[in-house]
Image (cartoon, rainbow, N blue to C red; front, side, top):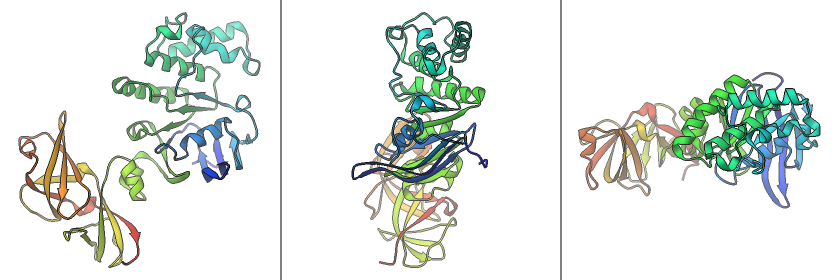
Length: 360
């Protein structure tokens, strides 16, 4: 992080009467970063984005963009532009008119020749050459998304805000647009601040992810940091997927599960008697038919086909919630039918430990 971030939130808070949508929040974003605000509905991520864009007024704190205090400035006086979830295109305007509209209003007005050149450049950048005269109603969802992107970048903002920009697209088109977003970010070199509830999207696109929960920042880090070293069960379960098991520490890296089985971890320890939650990624579980070290006895309850992978749901003896394991589609794996008794093995190096309470 540089000493002069392009976006800085200092103690920013947002209240709606007695309800606090965003508690006092500090956040610094470096110029050129792709940062994603990630979390479930109601976590404060969209509120944060709208505060940066000027669509909401902060109840407390200070917002700075490019070193200038913009806390009380309206959106059109901030060096940002926004791609909205519904794209908000003018149906009566052509693609070129939609893209160039921001260059015709007073705050961004430029000459006709320069406007036409910028619109053409933006069309080329998003792969819409030859579609300048079409109306939005004649475009596919992916093409309308590209028009919205072009309209946002044509004014050359310092920061581009993206509010769930791919949520309206089908899965295959969304994957293609993720590649386009990554390419645009690299070519433009400007700061992207995106909101999404899609963890896969956040992991694929972001330099850093801000995981939010109940109006607070739960953890900030790179996709790798958050996936490999989550700070809490909430982050572990939201970034990727995690099997979370209630346990009690025995000391020396050993833990007793609720059903009486034991597990070991080489990643962390806890004082004997402490309540903990053990986290294991589904892809780190090895399902076998015979016992071994750090093993858990289970019953297969369901098996889901995922192409070259299988996702197996397991009932752990004595546990109240299921385990999930993901494995390659081998002949042995396909033999795990519902009702089968199996043993799950977990390397102690893959067992995460989160302290959740004091001695019972």
